[in-house]
Amino acid sequence: MARDKKRKVPLAEELPTGEDAFAEAAASMGFDVRFEDDSLSGDKELPIEDSPSDVSDFLKGKKAGLRIERKGRRGKTVTLIEGLGLDDVSLKSVAKELRKALGCGSSVEDSGVVLQGDNRERAGRWLSDRGVRIRV
Image (cartoon, rainbow, N blue to C red; front, side):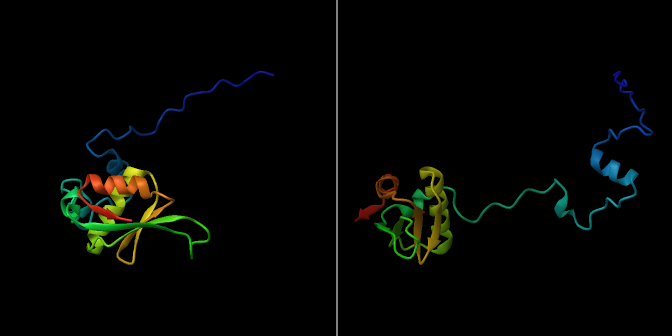
């Protein structure tokens, strides 16, 4: 059985080589490439998050309680960090930093941070390194 040789098919048009190749290609196909506002252009900077990047500033000198819980969670163990006295935005950033540092899931519930699994020792060390006094 002889194979057919693949033939190169010449392109009807040249590929766009301008500054925005996708916009040129879309325009050549008949699409409207104008933006209604400049929010989609890459010239503007992205907004900076409101939450501070270093959580140790607002954790220093706080007290926190650590405990584990299984009830109401279908047998899954979670670690609760309670009593930090922070607002929701700060608690969310603390939960995010704990999630990154400990490699576990985290969320904010009832003015406290919930970590998936029994992470009392690791979370206690992380919090105490940032100036939080731990009560068990």
